[in-house]
Each structure stands twice: as C-alpha cells, then as structure tokens.
Picture 1: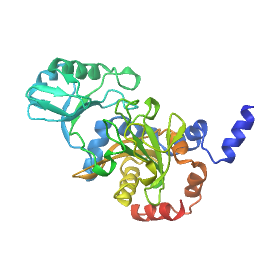
Picture 2: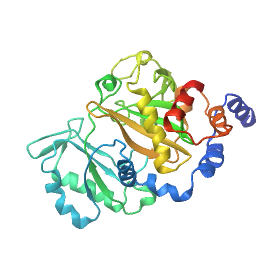
Picture 3: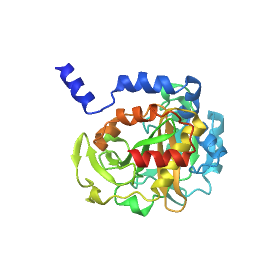
Length: 312
C-alpha cells in the first residue's frame, strides 16, 4: 500500500522528505554555512552588511548579568519583539504590541509585567527555546507593522511570505496567515493558513489549513481568491539575494511587509519544510530539476528572477 502511495506522490511531482534531505539539502548546503542561518542574530547582521532590509535591531542580552540592563533597553520602546537567536519553528518569540506607562501588552491585550519579561529573557538565555537546548542569546528588534493590504488576511499577528530558493532561483512561494487557532502566529502546524502563491505574479493559488482546502480566512472571513502580494518582484529579488549572502543552495527565505519600509527579510532557513507543495497544489521536484539542468547558473539576481517568472 505504501508503495502505491509513494508512486502516486512521485507521479504528482511531490518532493519527499528523504529526497529533500539527501538530494538537495545535503548536496547543496555546505555544513560550514549552517551556523549563519541557524542563528537569527547572525543572519540579521549578515543581511545588514550587504544592505538588505531587515527589522531594526534594538539590543542584545547575552548573559544573565546583562539582565540588569533590561529596563534601560526598554525605556523608550513602545512596541518590540524578543527572539532567541537559535530558536526554531517560531518558538520563543514574544511580541509586545504596545505599552501604557510602565505596563506592556501582548497583541491579545494580555498584560506583561517587567518580571514576566525578565523571566522570559532568562528562559531564552538558558536554552529553553534553542535548538538542542543549548544556552542562547536574546535579541530585541522593532515590531513590524504590517502592510494594510495583508492585514485582512491575519488574526492578531503578522503574515509572512516563505519563498523557496534553489541555487539563487526562486521556485515556489506561499503566504502564511495567523489565525486564532495558531494564537496569532504564522505557524502552520498550530493552525495558521498556508496560501500557495503564483511565483510569476504573487497571486493566490489555493489556501490550506490543517491539510484542508479553505476559501476564506477562518477569523476575518476574507476570501483568499482576491489576494495579490504587493511589490512581488522585489520580494523575489530579496529571496534571490539570500542565496548570495548565505551561499546556501537550497533555502527558505521568510519575508514580511512593513507598512512604511516595505519588504523585510525576517529569517533564512536551511531546512525549509515541504508543506508549501500542499498549499500550492504543485510539486517541487520538476522545478528543482529544471534549475539543475541549466548549463549555467551564475546569473545576476534579476536574471534569475526573470527566469523563474517565465518558466514556473
């Protein structure tokens, strides 16, 4: 039975986990390049060094001793995000949407005391959210205020765009929309909606939540069929540049749209998941093989974007 299922998926051009790991991640991602993207703070600094837009860094706390600097770090901040440098799957991210006097609040309206924030940062430092539970670093960045075009596709959170890039060519994309089920996070496993995007135009292909096709956002009621991502070509260019500065052959680039700054690189993933195929209703394999068969791949990012839009 599993053999028939495997054949069916292969005939549908679906890339499986083992094939992704062996034929693409192991083959095209050098081990020495992993630390750059496994550490979000290093990724942010590397992107900034080559003048790529990212959310502004407000501060870093590297040790328990530095926790005493927390009040001065937050003194003039109305909103911000705290992240573990080595977190994965969206774990350990704390969003503070606003403050009243000395009180901080989550997007849900829940109160965050100074002690709660201090405890949260302490947990990050101890490795509660890091890969392998190793001691970590907490960094603070500005809160991205989402583009109004995408606000209606989100519930108490910020939608992001995941673009799969192979050897510098953007090959597949999806929008991840927070819901009440995902607690306002763009986490597909927790109940966020994945919307497959046409790589040529940035328009919706179909939307999936918990592996079921849906037509409207479960909380806002907005229909996904009308979705169009603004600045689409710029997003594809940013994703292509992620290959250039990380030197990873197979990666996922996560981008958010800020209402004043436009597209910003949120993070880069060396082991992007495969749900994007379900959200798009398209298999990855033939697109990856198409790029592999090119005689020359050392193209300018604009040419790589043009090729993807003309061929996929």
